[in-house]
Length: 134
Image: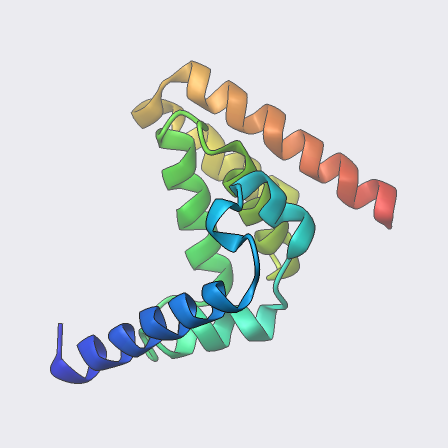
């Protein structure tokens, strides 16, 4: 980590803590509630925060989100709200349902079939929501 990156990261953490203090009750906020508060970020915002800020020449938002889906799947799809949210973001960033399903299928080799099955169930629910909203 460079000194510049460390400074940027520290500033971001401090800003996040300051924002948390500004919202009453945020200390006891549960991740499940986060989904309702902030359903998706725009592709441009994802690129700005994650694609361009941390690694200007690195992965685009879609690829980062697919990698995140893979990681959450391998963890056994325990983080259901986070997986649903990440799938929504991936769709918004241009990932197809097929790409998301393939990433999840691929993770069966690393996280096991039960983890893959749970992640696919979650993904199908998100896909259904997207169809209902279309």
